Image 1 (cartoon, rainbow over the protein chains, first blue to last red):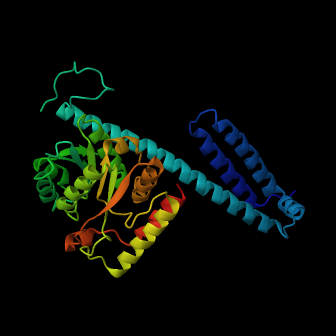
Image 2 (cartoon, each protein chain N blue to C red):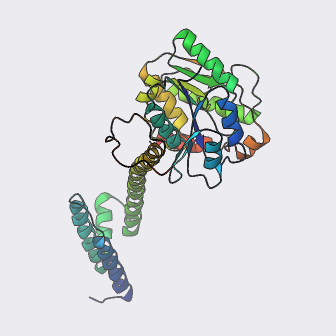
Length: 130
Length: 222
């Protein structure tokens, strides 16, 4: 089998992307995503070496050409990426808002020594400098 | 008089007007909490000088987040009975708040929404009027309420209602979210005519009508 330069470049890029992803820390839930990623990367290498595999998949599902198949897969993957990212960002924003709100309220309570606050320990710390 | 009323004022870069707004409000309502949403100017200091309690967000989070912070602050005051949401830019009239309180006290209501379309004091442009009408139609369609003006920043809420609200829409969609949460609470509400004063200042800062698109997107993708 003749190896083209583009194949070497593409394989290098795929490997680099995977390596970069694996360096990010994460929890157990990521394991499945990572296994999926390995399969994906493996398939990427296979499809670089044997481009015809896309044609075969395309014919299997009734798409004319392998390149069309790649495009469709890309559109779907990009959409799901957009949605997951949006949801993750909103999740993050909710947590970040709660954190900021807590800070803001604690600061003003410390300043003014508000009498109530059921959820705070009794004021045995020194009065705030004000 | 009015010791049990707290004005919640989301504050973001309003240094030119906030001192006047707070001072005028405090002639009738002594308790004002301004939630400074990460202003870059002197707003927070000026509000505090004018006699408001100032809660400062460490970073800008959006008006909805500021309202929720103000609610939580007001709930920490034991003898608070009423919360009024009030804009920082001087659009709202203190007399209107008095009328809303009278109405709520007389009729035993939990919520009074301000509406600029119940009389003809408010001078909104034709396009603005049309967009607000569409917003109201959408809100009435998707929530269990019937209102004439859903995106008015002037509202009166009882302590009970405030304690059951949880605004999660940090940005513009919070007004619709608030209406829909109140609609789901099954409490007694009414509308009261208010005069929204569009000054050159408020117009220059005013939300662009493009925001209607953003609000819709935020509501659909929630």
